Length: 475
Image 1 (cartoon, rainbow, N blue to C red):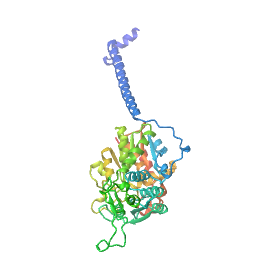
Image 2: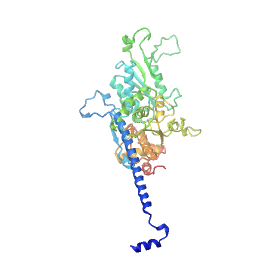
Image 3: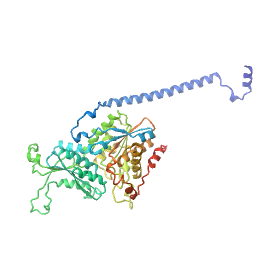
Image 4: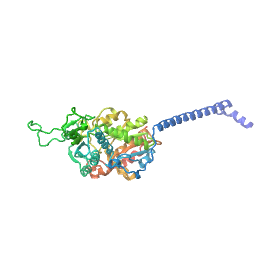
């Protein structure tokens, strides 16, 4: 060993072996550092476990459901309890679970079945509507809500009148006519225009029962004037042709009042029943189906009821959950969430086009605040602008990779899911849920029509989604 000592004495000072004391301190430091790291990791895991336990206490175990053995009551019994479907192509590419609530499986073909049923049931419970009395439901809609109302109204013994813009997909009009609804198509207009489709639906309901051939301006003619019934919401208009004195007697005992037909303007945009349908139905279903393991909820907003109701419920059981808005071109909600101002770049001087929300996407996007959207704004954490090209690309991508044939709003929602995951840098152990609002069956004439898209200068390019999935998360 003498040669080792000799060699050591010839080495420069900075190459000498450390002393036993120094080595001991280094070893102690490594052990302490490892112990602290292990301890901090254990503490973090402990708190995560405690959080999961707190969430599980709020979670009501799902009962075993044997749907194949059930007999439901009529078409309304088929509404709700839709499954969650894993979007395999997106989930595998992102490493995060992307789940879609398959609302296109409702009997009326969309998420609006829930809203229509709740509005009609609430009106019946309040005595505003009575089945099989010749009553008529009026609604202004771009299609899906009208189809849902017409479906349920036919089963409950009501007639329907639907007022809609004249540029919606032709398939929706055909479906309404097949369901026996009266359809009135009007030019697209701003909500401040008296001839805007929602305003016209309200006017038609308020005049329900009035004789068409009587001129209001002629006082000599004894025109039958419908009575306006008081309702919970000032926007909901209910008329009756019965002659009643609301202060004179108990209307529950008046045969004329109970049997005469009513005109009912549902007003999905302002009606609180819209929010309630999702707060007590869709939201709890998602919570049960994910066993409380959901990290984000993504939805577009047309009336605002879905994102408000589902978002409010999920936030009430998990305050850390992220709620994100999917907003198409031409809608002002993106800027309302991001900047507090309801404005879209297409509204600037010299750029505004023919339609207020100028997009090939139908069912979501709006340029005004509704009661239901105001319920959503406090709980929306982020928003994503979705272009027509992105929405079209996603619909084609899903057909190619998943065999899912979805509508435009569903595609928008899934593009927003991808953008949210990329923005947050999520790569594993996360679950994002969105709404698959309707199928592609109502969109052949526009959104699914390549010739229409070419004329509108909207590309059909599936690589847009492939590039989005490959793009790195922002720093």
